[in-house]
Length: 170
Image (tube, rainbow, N blue to C red; front, side):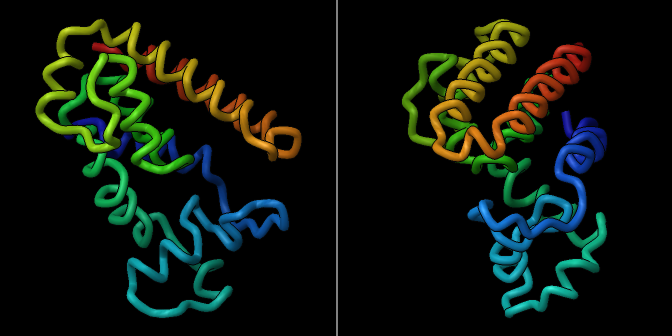
């Protein structure tokens, strides 16, 4: 199911946008959705603000593939569900997205998608899983104390991800 990574990355990058350094965002300096901290971990050195401003899709694509897509086993998920999990993993961490999927299928919520979770995923309807994970995502956003600042954008992103995911279903 690796066929979807490039398409999902394109949609994800539309959500992530370009360079930002919002004072209320705990991620700090971010470009193409990659925080300075994440990028420094990837290149194993400190980077300047200018280096962050100069990031390209080619710079961040391997980070997204390794740290989010592969970690959440998106290649093993059906079309649509892969994007739902990938987008939330990037936005809120792979562990949170994995636990939401696990909750949806009745697996142990340990934040690591493995064979047991994947077996349970295959027993559930893709549309139902997309809907349930999207619902969990919205409830999570609404529980955050920064919802007043970022909630409108998060809600839009969740809605767009849900809609795109449903359109991708095989």
